[in-house]
Length: 167
Image 1: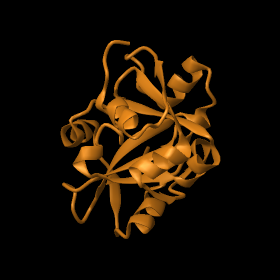
Image 2: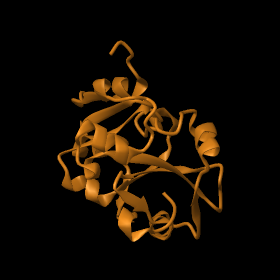
Image 3: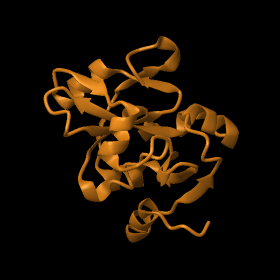
Image 4: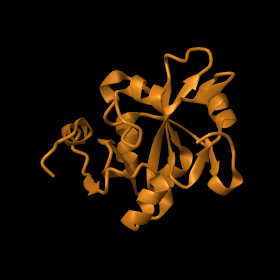
């Protein structure tokens, strides 16, 4: 791969090893991506853009495993907000400057977003996260990622089959 993305530069700067994992940029669903890559879905993380009702222009990023659904009530409680909602795709793209399917906390580090990471991530040695461009994920050591992003950790998801709020 010839392109060096900002997310990769950040990892290089902090001497965090990573593996570039490429797939068709037509794919946007993290669960489908996990299947295509032959990786368990609980190791492929999607990054969601969530807007607090009190200040929709100050959204945050939430990283959860592809086989889980965001629980908006749990996230609201963790964030200290009364109510939060998923950003519409067009809003998520406008707010981040990245395309849905390529939204990445690593690519947005210089913008000082508040990042939430679903607690189960810390049980895994490595997780796959978006590199900031559709079709490219990065396999990174979880605790190194936590040290770099300094996300707020908490259980903010439920298994997908339980339904829950919006994704």
